[in-house]
Image (cartoon, rainbow, N blue to C red; front, top):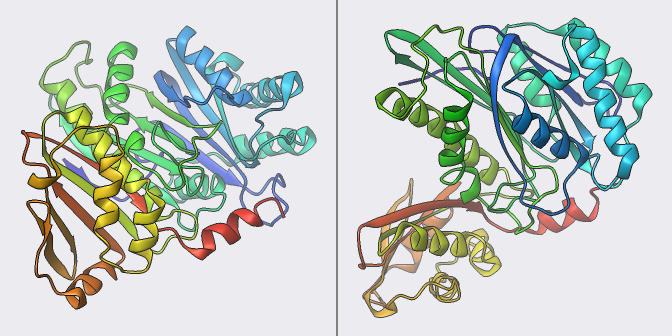
Length: 407
């Protein structure tokens, strides 16, 4: 597998566009379109929040009822969530505008929105934006970047990833774009992730791959313990690579899952590291746990702890907060057996051995914790299972950003 420079336009037969339509108050790109030149197998995973935005409800129905889809239209600035029947009608109209422009059925158009909850979409702006998106479609690299930029809200960086690999002697490409910076918590985030691939794979196996990968990628990140109303993780597979169609589990399916995992974890880490106001990516590895599920719970508990997050921000090796977070996670373990390490590009340091502090250097610990990416490793000495979760530090700027979000 090769990591390549690219996004949603990297696979064969995909075009994209990102434009400044006027949904946002600021002069920024705010509408995007991803288009497959042929109908593509479709799958998706969506928010677990009971309050679901209009585009999420639309997409859940399409993924359930339709074998294929051909386009995804997205807007930032307004979430179209908690907007009632008017919001549902506006979302359907947005899909129809794109369908009319592309001369396809509206049930082939997935939708996604992100931004302020409770506001209605400005449909005159949306209609003109949809027309401009269709006329701006291109398969070039810049168009993929434009689409990724158009879905950003409080994100500070554009988030894309792509890989190439071989299936049955054919070169297959998988590309993706995502957004997410705040309202991010396990069980997805306020994230819009669109994945494209030219692999030939059945809808059933495509959905199975997504279900597997989401649980070790997007469901293992947290910024602020808030699960959004708009989380959408969608994939289109148009088959233009002409590999033997994946219809069952086996080596080809496993390799496809590895490619999807690579891209999804890359994007997950970009999202966690770009948390609102964040200065550091916090990774927690739990190793030698009794079960994978327990390892996941323990790792999530650490990265969601505000006390841990603030200690990381202050480069303070307050390891007791990590133990505390694992202790209230609901998982039973023997704290007298646990070893705890921290590491970064500045080195590695064992802080705790068998539940007791080592004679570690506070100066060295501060050096390690001062880097942009920091890892905490908890060795439970209780089995062979492991898991990894990603979060970020909690800073003064998080409060400032969210205090001014609608302004």
